[in-house]
Image 1 (cartoon, helix red, strand yellow):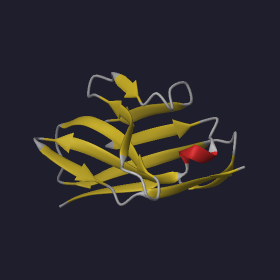
Image 2 (cartoon, rainbow, N blue to C red; image 1 turned 45 degrees about the vertical axis):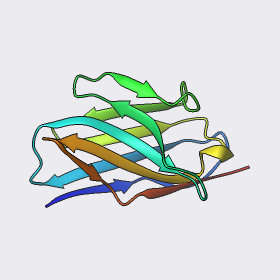
Image 3 (spheres, helix red, strand yellow; image 1 turned 180 degrees about the horizontal axis):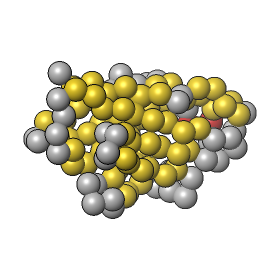
Image 4 (tube, rainbow, N blue to C red; image 1 turned 90 degrees about the horizontal axis):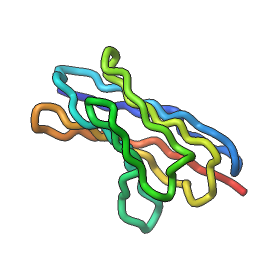
Length: 115
């Protein structure tokens, strides 16, 4: 059984920072791509950031220059450093990873940005 657990969400004022973490546990081997998604109320889930197993990163246009995704393969962790947060970043954030042809999701962590 593979579990992904996100942490680090919370309430922050606009312009502030948060660092999200996602820990993968269980019988998980050969993690490939890792991603962060978000979903705001009434909106579709969107891809925020993506990192390959070689470390190549891509970002949604709305977060470029403000968010940074990173990974620690020794610990099966993926992170999302979020700086310069805006109210429109308010959403539930989910980590996702691919391993041996299977895709796994966390339960989500809420980020709320106030003005």
